[in-house]
Image (cartoon, rainbow, N blue to C red; front, side, top):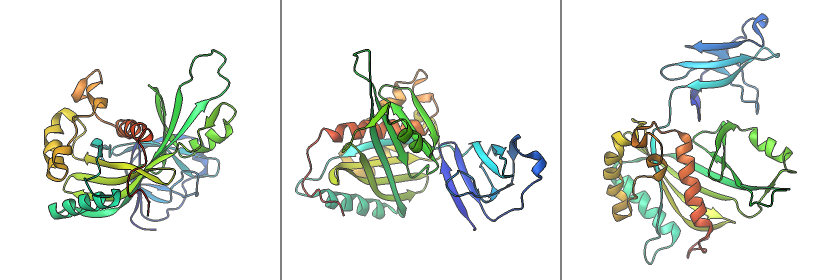
Length: 291
């Protein structure tokens, strides 16, 4: 295994090759680790194999398990940049796929390079057995391919939490308290482009296998403070979105510190949740077959 990496909501993890285990006498102790540490991989349990790296400030917290392996608790560094998620209308006389292809062509003409694909999905749950008679809050469980080891849970109006991928298993065990709203799953899938310090993701938003809209996510990776880079992001988005450039996302302006509060991955997911809530109410669009 060489050159592999995974990005979580807490940082960028990469590992290169298998390392020997450290002393078993250290098991079940918690370490704050800097630099490179041998980490073994146990599939499906969030354990990694090889040399562990995080970007500056290069700090991670690992826990030794009874089996003598190190498990990641958290890593600081490689934060996500400032993101803007918006819905792009289908071009007049065009289908969803034709409009997506047009956006791809504009990005490639700018010099953007395609770097794989992405997806963001959202499952809706509602609380069961509400004795108070008050409408219960909906719970949204979301996943983002950009943070494959993480799962985000967002209550309607807050609070929000970030957990590992085993949170999906927990929701199954809590089915007597939270019922999955069948047929309400929404997802966005599409191509991922890199242009200098920008990441651009153009996705087709689908529900029940029918296209409901087009999403565009733009991330400026070189900054985490929206107030310092929004004008630059807006200028870049105008180059391929034209008049469809959105206003600055309300998730930034509603914070106590305003535009100068650092952005995080939950800001991105909140924007996708807002977009998904809108498309749920829309009718199926022309040319909605998903290929």
